[in-house]
Each structure stands twice: as structure tokens, then as C-alpha cells.
Length: 128
Image (cartoon, rainbow, N blue to C red; front, side, top):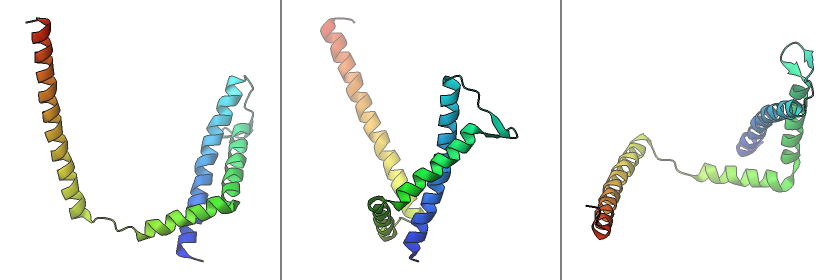
């Protein structure tokens, strides 16, 4: 199996877990809004909303995984991400310093423009 396919399949497994959690919370909310009791099946944690969330999450991830268009798109994204050259730690630190310095300079320029516009507006309106 291609290494990219392994990462994509692993991503669909993680997506199934995340979607199951989301559907669990959503179904519990829907039941509470509808004033339906969420019956505990196996102890305190397993309820109807838990079972419904897991089933919906797994079905959704499976349907997305089995869709040729979506799966091929996922493979293409993963292949392109493998081609990306990521910066090392020193390049990242330098870029961060440049961004912070540029942001501070732009903030000071905008502050001066804002202060000037305020003074001009006060002068025109005769506030001072």
C-alpha cells in the first residue's frame, strides 16, 4: 500500500472518531431540546445518543471514504503535501521576527494616521 494511502486512511479513521463525538453531542442536544429522555444503556456513559453518534460518525466516514471523487481528492492533497518543503526552525524564527517587526511598524503608522485624522477632525469641528 502506498504511504500516502496509509495516511489518508488513517485520517478517515480520525475523522470517524471526531464525527462520532460531534454526532453524540448533537444527538444528545436534539433529545434534550425535544424533551426526550436519553436512556442509559450500559452504565452512566452509554446512552442512545452515544450509540447514535458512533453509528452516524462511522457511516459518514465510511461513505466519504468510499466516494471515489472525495477519496481521490484526499489522495491528491496528501501527495501534494508530501512535495511541500517546510522551513526549518531557524527560518521559522526569522520569519516570525520579520512578521512581528512589520506588524509593529504598520501599527505605528496607522496610529499616527489615526491621531492625525482625530486632530484634523477636532480642528475642523472646533472642538479644541
